[in-house]
Length: 426
Image (cartoon, rainbow, N blue to C red; front, side):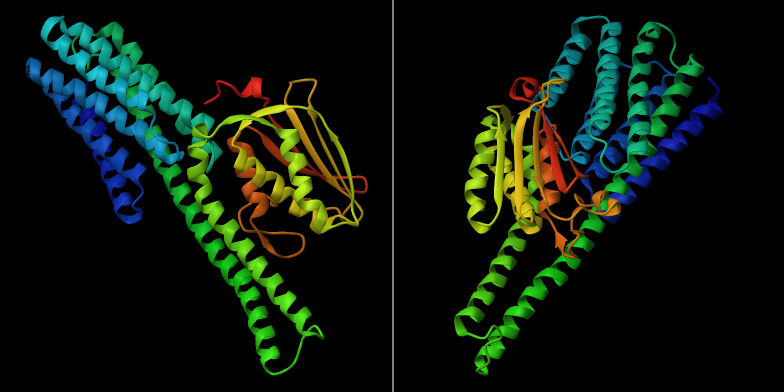
């Protein structure tokens, strides 16, 4: 193989490692650190590979080379899990430990070719699985996620092609190393861009949080302070002492609700990643019925229409109570005379369909597209978190939610897999 190509690819590796470590020092995101460390390990392993051109490799160095390959892939896979906010599964850790032990046994008892095969297979599987993880969790930039995922997937497959050449001299397949460098570099740069997208999204959320706090909480505090000041001066803004106190209590309740939603949204990512610990079979109809019982007294003038079938889902009870509470609270604010709820099974794909309709005003198309965003301003001009929380929970249960303007009102739709369809999904 051309020495200039080896030097060029080695220089690219060094540059990418330094870029990752510099970005980590600036943003302190652990996935950047893990990929930077993985790159450093690959650089060291690359130096061992290049040394083979001029000298043979003793067995102990060969084992170190194998371990470096597996450790680098493990750190990259760990970085992917951190990026998608998922805990690293125990089976991944155990699998890599078993691989290292088997490689050591091969070093002592079995010909080297078996060690090369196992090392290539483990590295290839790790990269393929990393690519599949990104495919399933495209959050921050779908195009960049797909490019990075495809590159990781193909990068992993190239190691399987190397198995057929384990008995040939190293660096004899120019095109093989060109493909490894091409897709490896694309995946590495792509993941770096994804991390920067995530950092930008988190910064935007922090900015929106400050807007939310300053707009909503400050407004309530000013109302309470104004009422208290007027009452101290002997003036009752609502015309009576009890009415003014009720208004202060109402504003305090609203402030408490907003604080609760803000704190719940912040901890929701942690709760979602640990859903498997609290999953159980739930009757969605019973949860909806219980929600109606909790909210119907707030608007006794409303007519409640119900068509609820006995259907079951697999989920977290507290989170689904939060979904129903937030949706019903939204319906009460906008309904004029009637709220209609239905729970049934879609005949085509056996998914559970929850529909909640109210006869309130329709929503502008531009607002419809952004209602589920964090801290998005609603049609009444107020910042909200309830619908953002609902969407996160529904999607964590492999479902989807959307809103449609229908004749005479607005309908919320939730499609979620049934208990039978959801079992076995990660």
